[in-house]
Image (cartoon, rainbow, N blue to C red):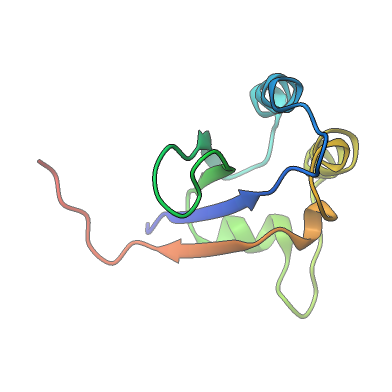
Length: 114
């Protein structure tokens, strides 16, 4: 089973409260139930290109679970919990519709343990 790592970049709209965003996203992520979602990690950049900007790292069990929940690019769909997260939480804070955030889904090529 090859896990999928998805990185979603969040850009807050001008005037949005970062403190309120952090609190509401933390609460929503704690309640989110999506089959095959193993972990969600809320991130804030502190160096580099995305310094002081936000993101979420999603870890799914495999590509099948990602596709079962979200469909394909040709036939997208969203789980009910995800719709709440996007429409009721993220839409208050982001500078664009939550479906339009920049994201990348990654397959693991090789994992190294140190």
